[in-house]
Amino acid sequence: LQSRPRGEIVCQVLADAGIAGGSRAIRRVGELIERYAKTDEPVLILGETGVGKELVARALHQQSGKKGDFVPVDLTARAPNLVESDLFGTVPGAYNDAPNRSGVFEQANGGTLLLDEIQNLSDDVQAKLLRVVDEKKFSRLGASDKTQSSFRLVAATDANLEQLVKE
Image (cartoon, rainbow, N blue to C red; front, top):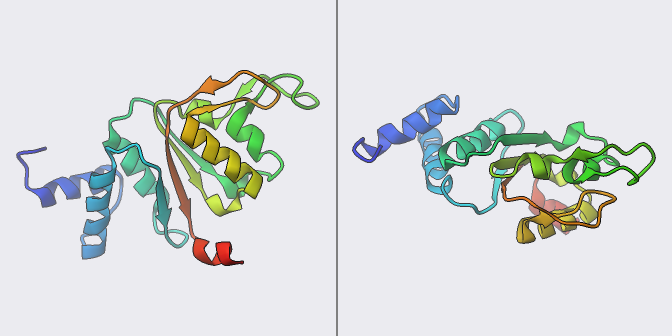
């Protein structure tokens, strides 16, 4: 890729991700994907419904070189009382009929975790997520031992987060 013109590389990044268009704004998105793909820093993608936030997140993962999976989680499709078990996983005894099940933190190990519509996480779960991102360790619900997981977090939203914080 180094010998190809920069614009051609950006176009290929976008095409590989299924992102179509040649406008200045789309090319800027491709440049940002190229710039941030190789970092492990969390990324927040903002945009209206239907603009392709998941495609951008997938492109970040594809260009990252990470060997693990891309794990998208739509938080609007999850029951609020089940989100924590979906993220962390469970062990038998965590609650009635709790299975021994991995959560998305384990499933995304070595890859990228997309939490779409991040504003839907409760304050309590947001605080726990921050600890997982900082420490790269977590416990399944009902477990006392810690599990290591190294994933890149990408969050997406169509909400005005600044306004939500003010409220």
